[in-house]
Image 1 (cartoon, rainbow, N blue to C red):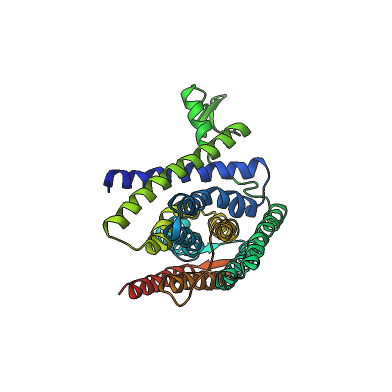
Image 2 (image 1 turned 90 degrees about the horizontal axis):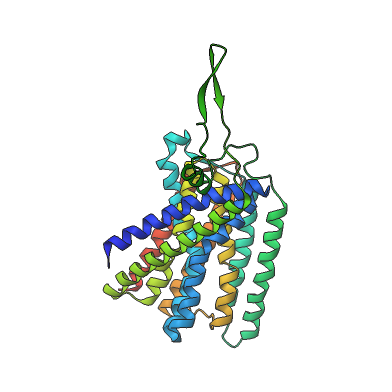
Length: 366
């Protein structure tokens, strides 16, 4: 493992996420999108691309039983990681920025978050039913798999059409790409607040944040996604080397190691939004990704693999535990979101559930 590349991948992902959150916020402002559309759909789908690609590559390129095991494990591991470790990171972020935020809770749009979780529990529940169904029920599995696609379409349409307009009346940071272009071309203009003489008196002139062009907004979002994907691939490559050096079981790589790497964008995005007190975006980014991961990648897994969990086997038992823990965490967060605030303790439960699963993994390896 190259330590420099390992650390560089972190920096690349973090830089990409900073650009992405900035670009997504401007996208929401420009197209007058709702909070749910920005956090739960646009941001969630964008940052879900890396972990969607990983299982497809594993199934198609590695092939055989090992490739299928890694692919199915990665597909099941993504919602599990989001429902546990990602929420735990949100809790840590609240703790990190409590002085800046002047609060120890997240202020969220509970209706939006609960809507995401309803779709997640339904979709992931259907995925679980398909997984434990006997192998000879192939037609039933395929029917359930294809049912998840229209379910996600309904979720997307409903999310886009409902909710308050995101960031309406709120001051945003300059679009980074626009700011760089203006500095390079000498068009940066006046600072936001500068003294201007007026008949012997000095008054303060405030310059509002410049509205960037739609083209620049889209270019920054696309470029940041590219940066995130490059960083995630670098990170996954180094993680795979660690697994090889330690002679890890492919299941461990699929359920734990790979999702940690590929879910980094969601974790970093949520951390940045919590820092800036945009809490609905932070949680919506995670819950929206949970809905996406429980629909589209699961459909791909059902079509390309046998999609069957043998709960009598070590592998099947751990995969079943991951599904159960993810759904349990979703249910807990659903009830936590019934209030306008989510306490830090409610987010830390995700870390506890993740620790329970790690304990199960270590026990099974004995």
